[in-house]
Length: 156
Image (tube, rainbow, N blue to C red; front, side):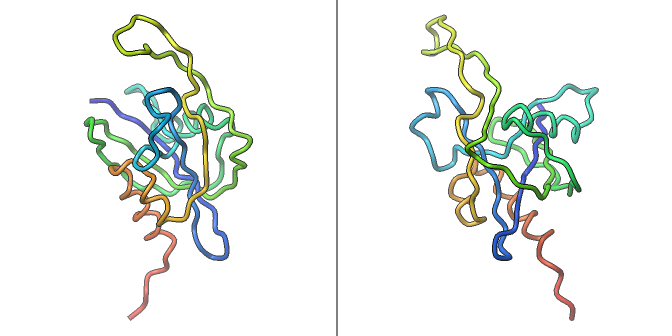
């Protein structure tokens, strides 16, 4: 089973949370918007500590390393069967400063030709409602878990 770890970076604007999502790079995702965005995340090896992997992957996909307090958001399972463990962290990031690492893919598929592409081609801040429309559907529960953490429990 493949495992990934990621960070849901958030900031409060006028008391409302906004989350940073990234869009995958390359020709396959070029024309896709709704359901294509993700939290910055990536795979890690069995011996690697998941939070450390999440911080590393965030850095590889954005060019910055998040710091501060990390709140566990638990796990979700994507359609592919990959298990994603995520944390929330408050912070800020200028999407214009995005500096993603590159990877190689075979494109067109089955052609044997390798194409070097950025792992993510853009980043953007979204309200929770906007993020629900953009995010990979399997990751939407992470937004709900963040909202639960940020919303103080009502007292009886």
